[in-house]
Structures are given as C-alpha cells and as structure tokens.
Amino acid sequence: MIPFGGELAALTTAICWSFTAIFFSEAGRRIGSFRVNAMRLILAVAIYTIILLVTTGRLFPEDLNSRQVLWLALSGLIGLVIGDGCGFKALVMIGPRLTTLLWGTAPIMATAIAWVFLGETLQITQILGIAVTVGGVSWVIAERRFTGNNQFNLAIGHPDAGSLLRGVLLGLLAALGQATGLVLSKHAMLDCGGTMDALPASFLRMLSSMIMIWLFAALRGKFVDTIRGFRDSKALLYAGGGAFFGPFLGVWTSLIAVKYIAAGIAATLNATTPVWIIPNVVLYYKERVTSRAILGAIVAVLGVALLIIGDEILRSI
Image (cartoon, rainbow, N blue to C red; front, top):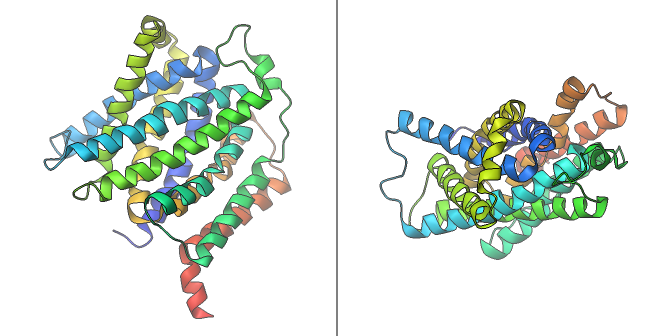
C-alpha cells in the first residue's frame, strides 16, 4: 500500500460522489429516486462484472465464506438500499447542497458505531481533524438556505415530492445508512475469517443490493414500472454516469479506504464531497462561488491535512 493510500482513496471517494450527487439528482427529477437506485445497481453490477472478469478471471474470491457474504449483504441492505434510497429521495426533494450537508454527519455516526462495534479509538489530533473538516464542510453547504424551490419544481404527483422536514429526516437516515454500511463492510473484509480485497467486496455488496431492491420492487408490484425507467434516455445517461462514479468507483475506493484507516477518518474524508462539488455546480448550474465557500473549503482542507499528518505534526512539536 502506498503512503497515505487509505486517505487518498477516501478523498477519491469524495470527488467521485461530487459527480454522483448531480447525476442522480438530475436522473431522479426525471424518473423518481427509487427507479434511479434500482437502475444504478444493475449498471454498477455490470461494470463490476466486466472489470473482475478482465482483471482476475473470476467474480468471487476462492476463499470466500458465508460470514463474509452475510455481512456484506447486510452492509449493502443498510447502506446501498435503505441509506442510498433515503439519500436519493432527499437529493430530489431538498437539493444536493442541503442533502450533502446532512450527509456530513456520517463521520460522527461512523466513529461512534466503529467504537462500539469494532473497538476503534482515535487520537486527539484525529478527533480534532474530524471536527475541523466537518465544520469547514458545514460552513460551505449551510451558506444557502432551503427555499422550497426543489419540491415546487417537481411535477404534481412526483414520487419524491415532500416537505423540508421529511427531506431532512431522509438525509439524516442516509448518513446513518452510509456510516453503518461502511463499518459493516470493514468487519466483513477484515474480521470474518480472512482478509478480503475491496473490489470483490464491493461487487458482493452491489450484487446483493441489486437482488434485494428488485425483489422489493416485485413485491410492491412495481417491477415493470421500475423497468420503464430505462426508456428515458436522458435519465439512463445520468444514471449511467452516476453508477460509474458512485456505486462502482466511489464505493470501491471507499472500501479501500476503510480497509486501511479508521472508519471515522474514512467517513470524514468521504464527507468532503460538498467541497469538491463546488466546481461541478459552478460549471453545471452556473452558480457563483462566494468567499465564504472558498474559506469553508480551505478550513475543510486544513482538517483533512490534520487527519493525515496530525500525528507527525504532534511529534515534531
């Protein structure tokens, strides 16, 4: 593993998710968040299948055991089906900026869950780094208040129309799902009878999540209706881009990160997405970058630096 490889993987995750937030938000406005979630899992599984067959010649590790499959499936259910399902609805309902602010609570949740479930503890510099990073990210995203435009722009009867309160609750549930899924994935890769690589672990999470969400669609009598989402070419294009940067590349790098660094630190670096999303919204939505946004980004970067090299700084004092 290269120096600071885990930290770099977590930052790569954040950058990938900055693209994903826009892709899935746009797709969800066209066809609804549930369809997008179901579509992107099929697309992600297809991408993983091709990559694994080309690079390893097999889809599953030879030493894969039932405990690893169980915990990865559970992490997929909590993180990718329930958590991301709530997150996608929030993206459409209250917009990317406020939703990503709520996702910023994931590091605190992940740190607490990893402490209880995995026995992970953090140094004082790491706790300070988490606080500074979350503070900087919150400063960036909290600049603009929710005006209700997102929900009023949705068509009458849109499946993701709702109130500010409902959107906030969904965003917090998404953060809890992300944090829990991350911790459970780490447990599966490291504590269930052998070490498992991040790529096949990600594939198993995606595959089990895809099966569960389409089974749920069938039980609700929405299987055919969900398939109709593929007819919208623009939504399919957005979902495809989101699937590449999110469920494939983003989830893969997030599992690389959590395998080598503490879950709380990985979740904190993942949560810098709102900083990386700034140039995306400037280019796509033509938003103006304010001095407050720039200052918040600088604070977040300082927090990231403290997380990565805080111990070296402390030893040099």
